[in-house]
Structures are given as C-alpha cells and as structure tokens.
Length: 343
Ligand code: NAD
Ligand code: UDP
Image 1 (cartoon, rainbow, N blue to C red):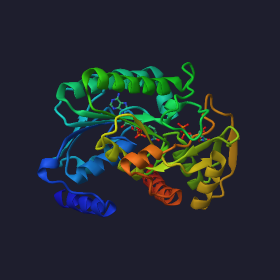
Image 2: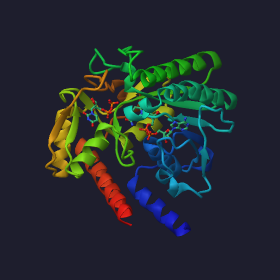
Image 3: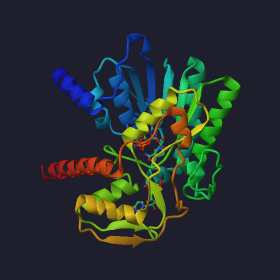
C-alpha cells in the first residue's frame, strides 16, 4: 500500500510540475469543506502535494470517497464525515468553504437543504474561523449575477436574481453567504476571501451531475441525442478545474478581501458547445432541442481584469485540451461502469 501511495504521489508530482514544496514553517492546517467533491478533491490534491495538513469535512451528498481515497492513510490527511449544517470544532489556520450542492438538479433536489447548507453551514464555518482566528475562502458563484443584464460580468455588477424561482434556493443562499462573510469581516475582523466561480469542468465531475459538460460528453460518447435546453443560443464560458485551483490558492494567499471572479472568458453558445464536443469525441449523435429551463441565464462571461491585476492569474488550459482530458475521463468511467455491470 505504501509503494502504491509513493507511486501515486510521483504520478501526481509529474502532473503538477509547478507545485512548490514547503518548508516546515510554511505548513498550515487547512480545512476543505466539500473536499470529496469535484473541485474540492482537486484542491485537496494540490494542498497535499504542497505539504500542508489537510482536513476534509464532507457528508458525501454529491462527493465520493474515491475522489480522495489516494490520500486516506497519509499522515497529513484527515477525512471527517460531517454535515456542515452542524457546528464543527477543530483547530485550523485556513478554511476553503466549498460544501454545497453545485449543479442545478442537485441543488433543486432538496431546496430547503441547499438554503441551510449555504446559510447555517456558512455561519458555522465563519463561527469556526472566528473562534480559531482562521482565514476563510467562500466558494461563491457567477449565479449571484442571476440572468445578467451587464455583459461580461464585473464584480461591481449587483446582478439580476429572481428570489422566487427554482434557482433561488442556490442563488439567494450564495448571496446571503457573501453578506455573512462581509458582516463577519466587519464586525468580528475575520479575514475572508470570496471567489465568484464561473462554470468549471474536468475529471471527477459526477456522471449524473446533470450539468452541461457531463451531459454532452456522456451523450456524445454513447451516441445518444445531445439534449439542448431551449434554442441553444444562451452562452456560457468554461474553465478547466486546474485553472480554478490555481486561482483559489492565489486568492486565499493574496490580501484581497472583496469578491473576485474566477473563470475563463472564452464564451460559447450552448449549441456551438454541443457541436464542439461532438467533433472532439468524433460522435454522430444528433442535437435534440428540449423546452428551456426556467430562469436560465441567457449569457455569461466573466470579466477577469481584477484577478489578472491582483493575482497575476489567468486561465491557462484551452477548451480543446481541457475537454480532451474530460472526455478521456468519462470514457474510462463508462468502461468501468460497463465492466462492473457485466460482472
Ligand atoms: P460537488 O457537488 O462536486 O461538490 C460539493 C461537495 O460538497 C460534495 O463533496 C458534497 O458531498 C459536499 N456537501 C454538500 N452538502 C454538504 C453538507 N451539508 N455538508 C458537508 N458537505 C456537503 O460540486 P463542485 O462543482 O465541486 O462545487 C464546489 C463548490 O464550488 C460549491 O460550493 C459550488 O457552489 C461552487 N461552484 C462550483 C461551480 C462549478 O462549475 N463546478 C461554479 C460555481 C460555484
Ligand atoms: N444545458 C443544456 N443541456 C443539458 C444541460 C444543460 O442545454 O443537458 C444548458 C443549460 O440550460 C444552461 C447551460 O447548458 O443554459 C449550462 O447549464 P449547467 O447546468 O451546466 O450550468 P449553469 O450555468 O446553468 O449553472
């Protein structure tokens, strides 16, 4: 098992050649809530490789143990099966607060719970930050801009969110969580960071996530119809997960405490995005147009001027490269699934 862990580590080191290893005095105790999920597990990999002590708190609602199983047993790693709607009493230096369902089908599955996770859950994490004087980064979202009338979206835009629709449980609870961070920063002098994350994709996305990248790639790979909601003229801009991880680390370790967009400004209509995925997969799947979803934002693209100037950060991975890695991942997942169904 030890040999396997060393091999895994070496493989991961090759994957992240730019990782800086830490001297003992720079090592921190870092809590990642939602660390067994898609983004969280990639962040955990990077923090572990840097040599930090990492504690993951996750209730496995959408996260999976296999996303982080390569760290289980490592002396710097701890996994706590914990629902953040309940308080957590531990000692840490930094908190990356990512726990929350993220895809529309997942956050609409139990809207009341989604609101609790982002409101009560965030209060709990801010309370922890206050008690142990830890720094907290909150994973906010481009959904705080709602169906935006300003394009591209800058951090100074207040947004156009419906407080009463099916997306409200997510959008409004992320907004109140931002407000809570601000209130704790002002009143309790907590050091906070707010990352407004735009659509992110990559390996370890959940197969049944229901988001556009996993849906389209899986449909293309299986030559099933590609399900376009509405006329497909709505736009999104997609960032690869390693770029987001770079941005989250840079933001946490910066001295910027206002909200900051992290996303890739490369914008596509959903229809063109479907065609691109079909081409990369080499699929003959047909495009199938379904009813539009309620309150679906019509356009979305981040203005990342702020991240460029404050963090010297910009996405590095092109859509083609990122999609090819993601396609390879889902291709493999399908093979594993078919294999286990046969046996
Ligand atoms: P994900 O569903 O893969 O990960 C979320 C993780 O949080 C999962 O491991 C889940 O089990 C855990 N979780 C959910 N409720 C919990 C609870 N009550 N207690 C403890 N753990 C809980 O989603 P993701 O794409 O990795 O998103 C991570 C964060 O980034 C979320 O806060 C999401 O809102 C935010 N975000 C993601 C995107 C994106 O495109 N992926 C865009 C904007 C914002
Ligand atoms: N979408 C689609 N077909 C799908 C899944 C999503 O056309 O099978 C569209 C969806 O209506 C939205 C865009 O793709 O306009 C992005 O959806 P996703 O759920 O990935 O994320 P969102 O940005 O809406 O949170």
